[in-house]
Amino acid sequence: MGYENIRVETRGKVGLITLDRPSALNALNSALIDELNTALSGFETDERIGCTVITGSEKAFAAGADIKEMGSLDYMEAYLSDFITSWEQVSRTRKPVIAAVAGYALGGGCELAMMCDFIIAADTAKFGQPEITLGVMPGAGGTQRLTRFVGKSKAMDMCLTGRMMEAEEAERCGLVSRVVPADELLEEALKAAEKIADFSLPIAMMTKESVNRAYETTMSEGIRFERRVFHSMFATEDQKEGMSAFAEKRKPQFNNK
Ligand SMILES: CC(C)=CC(=O)SCCNC(=O)CCNC(=O)[C@H](O)C(C)(C)COP(=O)(O)OP(=O)(O)OC[C@H]1O[C@@H](n2cnc3c(N)ncnc32)[C@H](O)[C@@H]1OP(=O)(O)O
Image (cartoon, rainbow, N blue to C red; front, side):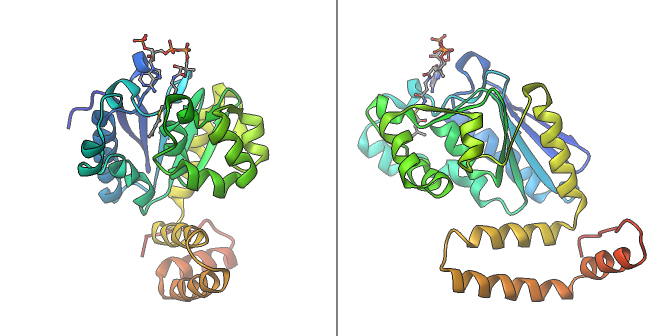
């Protein structure tokens, strides 16, 4: 497929998707979302890929949903097309996905970053849910995911005032896993992704599923789920390889089995 709004590359075992609508600060229109979903599906089924990085430009990860495209939508179009639901594909990927965020991550851009498994932010990153300034509220999971990341008080502050949060505050409150200098962002994100992709893919996928379960169930159910999945790992060749390699003081060679 020819992409017009994103760039898609592979770097060894890592899939790299760069949002690329510079004239609109990577505003997320339906064409971009379709392309993103196609690229993500491609990496999901590509056996060589173990992790994906989604990034944007120096100025913007994404400045939100495309306001010019969305502005004239009416209720029935939004309802019948189930507007936004197709954006959720990144949250349904089974392989790990990292967001590498520099500049603006606003509205749907912040929500897209939060759908990834973790966010590495440049020191220039600015997060926000400014939808209230446009007469709407977050519609791609912002009221739910942001609240789980940063707690009720800060999520209310962000969603009700529409203010932006700098990278340092985002790290302090748990929205991002680490902040790095802007000129090292991609390198750091790719390094993290390569590290993940070098581990056993099924074990990484099960780990991701188990961490995500923490957001969807009670503690006792989550612990039970973790224990069942953990037990199942002893049926894998990669568990035998990982533990043998440790005992033999060598680097493990995982075969995703
Ligand atoms: C997911 C759901 C349901 C909702 C949403 O996401 S709603 C959108 C939330 N995002 C926003 O409200 C941010 C809108 N953008 C801005 O406030 C500013 O662009 C900025 C603060 C991010 C940057 O300001 P700056 O002065 O540096 O740049 P601009 O001249 O304003 O922008 C450059 C260029 O990009 C176009 N742009 C920016 N954001 C969007 C957007 N979200 N949708 C469509 N177009 C956008 C902007 O209009 C301008 O284009 P022109 O040069 O053609 O005017």
